[in-house]
Length: 625
Figure (cartoon, rainbow, N blue to C red):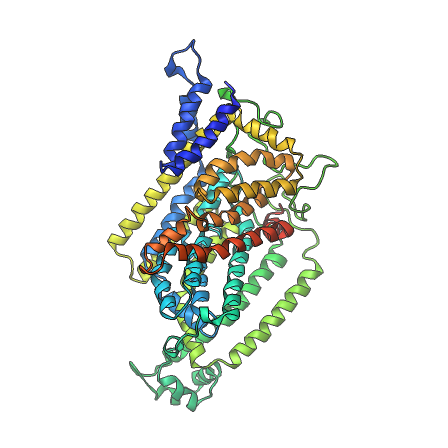
């Protein structure tokens, strides 16, 4: 029974009930069953024969058999193991020494660690609480403004849900029926770009008003240098790489030096020389990887088709008597992907023209004919030359302090960085699916925690329990959302909203702005889970009409939802931080510190509108989309 008014009543009730504090998942299921019972009610049949119960079973089974959702518990386990393994303390110290001469060095360090740790764990609450414990008190003791200190922690801690691997992206992929790997590739640059905008704001504010971030005292910026290194410089040369290289071939004088643990050994000389080569190896390895992928590999990578077999939420199943979706019946074999083939002579979809290397019939990215363009070789040569100049200047001034910082960064950041890059690379290059990559990441997190000897049996049990709790919440949310969305469409609420939007005669850009403005406002009372699960499916069927790429629209939503953690009154980041902050730090001060970052989020979204290539270039290049 179609009744659009009841559908709109459902939508209004869900917001009210959630704000009253009822569990979101069971609220969705309860309202879905209640209104669905009315929609399917037939007086001629027994009330137990109501088809809403069949709908509940079907949608529950669909969530249970959704392969995309399998990666959620694995990525969550990866994050909780790292968080419980307490691997961040040494990382914070080493990065602080690296940026000790930069304005607002502690705030910059906090942002970098939040970004890096958020990528590795993807847990907003855990990152904000952890950085609140580690970084807030040092910044306050150093005389930092409370707004600066609290703002950088709350804003930086939310980046984990935007930069892959992210649970939010996986949930959107399941809701929208899109490929996880394409969404990961599309969210990569915007995520780091938003972090870069945060960095510009912090450093710029500190330069304009140095009083908000006083210079750190000498004891916090001094690099601990072993006593033997100055004596080693006197014997060889002040340049440590050159001196260590000479000592490898002429070690007699170096082996006579005393250290804290005895005489200097040849093995110690070799290890220190290997540490000096880390920056060179990173730059050379990155350039070599780019050269291999573009020139040798030739874009012949395979896309892991995570979207295969998924059903987009927001449309009613026809076998249960729902109305036909906007645009006619679905073709045999499932719904047509959003942003499908452009009609002959129709306008170009928002997000740019079709790139070279379009997918072939197997779903793989077809190689670009003729190899890379000349512009690639020119750009690559310029970047390589600039990197060589920078490395030459860096090595020419490398003394004991710089060498010790490299060693600290190598031991604290490198293992986690290698794991994170490996997890993302195998997904983006099509070597594994997102689920398989998540399994690799979870196993790697255990190895890192065990090697650091920070993970015991108690912490392991806590990580597994929290993973099960989080996964259960997400899966019940998905089931409740599926039932709610189907009933909402059956009652005609979806069709009514579509007709209203289409009657406005909006351009694609105007629709983008309208939809994102609504989601931005919903971020004030609601969290990202409710917005992705409940409200995003309402907009998805309209994307095809406006010829908007769902990948582009989805990534803009991801950036937009950063505001859900930064906007009162339900700004969860503020309450996470308040729980571990000193008593003199008020919630209003934390809110005041978060407000500028909401404006930065809006600036980032505007730049993404103006420059769609920021979002779509990487998936276009990797998969020919």
